[in-house]
Image (tube, rainbow, N blue to C red):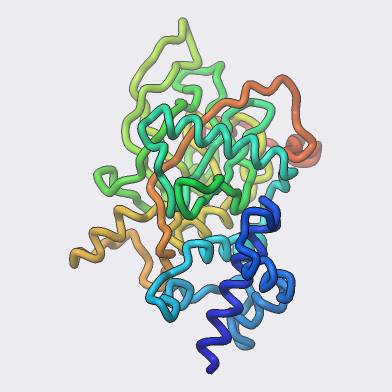
Length: 327
C-alpha cells in the first residue's frame, strides 16, 4: 500500500513539474489531473519520507518500475526540486529563455549527429561574456522538448594574458578515458585554491583545441576541465569570464553533479562491469538517467540579461591579485 502511494506521488510530481514549463497540453489528461491534485512541496516531503530532508532522493526508489514493469522517464524531473534545495548559487531563467537555450542545445546536438539523444541529462554552458551560465537539461524521448532542470553562474576563459584560452565550443564527452580526480584543497603561490576545497571533483574532459587568448591568437591544445574554485576568494566572482579556459562552477553544483552522477553514465558502466573507481564516493546516489555530454555554446548576446547578474561591487572589491591565474 505504502509503495503504491509513493509511486503515485512520484508520477504526479513528475507530471506537475513537466507541465510547469511546457504547459499541460503536452501531458495526457490523466497525468494533468493527477498533477493538479498534488502540491509539489507536500509531494516532495512524502516522496523523501518524514525523516529525510526534502533535497534527498533515493535513486533506487525513483527508478522503481510501475505495475507494468516500466520506469517513467519523467521521474528525472524530480531532480528539479533537489537542485533548488541543494544548489546555493542558482539562476532563474524565464520560460522563454529556457526554451531558447533548449533550441540551441538541440541545434548543436543535431550538428554533431546526436539529434536523437534523450533519456539522459545534458549539461549546457553559455560561454558568452554577458551570460556565463551552466544549465542542466533533460528530455524523456526524442519527440519531447528539452527542459531545464536548473542553472547556475560559471566562469569561463578570460583572454588577454599568456596561457589564457577562450573556452572551446562544441560537444565534449565525459569519459573515464580521461579519468576525473579530486581536489587536494591546497593553495597556489597566490594563496588561491584553484580547484576549490578539498575533495571537490574535477570533471576532466581531456585535451581540446582552444583558441589562444594572447599574442596573435590561433589554436592550441588545452586541458579542458570543469571544476569548483576557491570558495572564499573566487566563487563570489562567478558570472564573469575569469578562468584560464576551464569552466569554474559553484561548490554546491559540483557536489550535486557528483552525488547524483549527472555526467557519470560511462563511469557507471565500469562500476557495473565490476571495476572499483576511487573517484566515485560510496554514498553517491547515481540517477538512472545519468548522462555524459557537456555542450558549450556562445549565445552572441550583446547585453547582460537580468537573470544573469554580474558579481556585486563587494565581491569585485575583494578580488585578490592574480585571481585569474587559477585554472
